[in-house]
Structure formats: C-alpha cells, structure tokens
Image: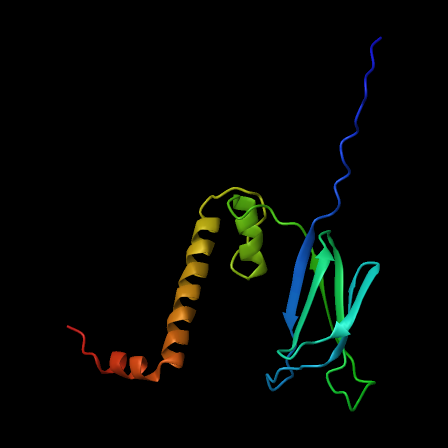
Length: 157
C-alpha cells in the first residue's frame, strides 16, 4: 500500500517593518505626549508620542497609503496636522534600479527608473555622496567651533 501525504507550502505572512517619525512644531520643538492616529490603508494605529516626540509602530510591510494625523496644540483640539505618503517596495540597494529610485526620492536622479547605468546614475550618486560628505563636514564644524576656528586660521601653501 502506497501512502502519500502532500504538504502545501506554508502561507507566508506579510513581513513587518518599523515605522518611526519624530514630531516637531514650527519652532523645531519636540512634540511629546501628543495624540496621533496613523492609518495604513484599512488599519489604524492610535497612540501618543513618547518623551522624545517619536511615533514608533511595527506595521505590516505592504504597499499602501500611509496617513498620519495629530493635534499639535492640546489647547486647540480642532487644529489637526496631517501628513500622507506612500509605502512602496524598493529594489535592493545593490541593484541599479533600487539606487535610481532612492536617488530620485532624494531629488538627485532626474531620469527614468530603467535599471541601466548609462552615466546619469553614476553622476547622480557622485553628487549625492558629495553633498553627504559636505553636510558631515559642516555638521562637524558646527558641533566643534574650535575646529572651525583652527581650520579658518590655516594658510594655504
């Protein structure tokens, strides 16, 4: 007698991802203890920002429309701020199309997302890297005024 058991492949649950955002007011002050509602398509997440003004939730990893609504002025509950964005999948960072999409989202890549590096992707990446390095140097000077003063007193040879 031949007995065969067929097993169906396990159903894979959607992978979660972690959403984190810090709320600040127009003066760049942290908004702690602020009630918010976060919606991803048909699922709502409700809470309050932590002491550092962060909203942190594990969400289902699926493309969709994300809407964040909050009341930044507790004394005026009728005033509501909201932000919306799209959650989408990205190709790997090691993939040219993934690099193009990330660069485009940051405003560095003006071309089509074609996955081909015909020079535009490389030059966009170089520009992005240059700006990141420049921002890091500027941040170091802002955080260390003594270093900034010493570097401005150096004479070129």
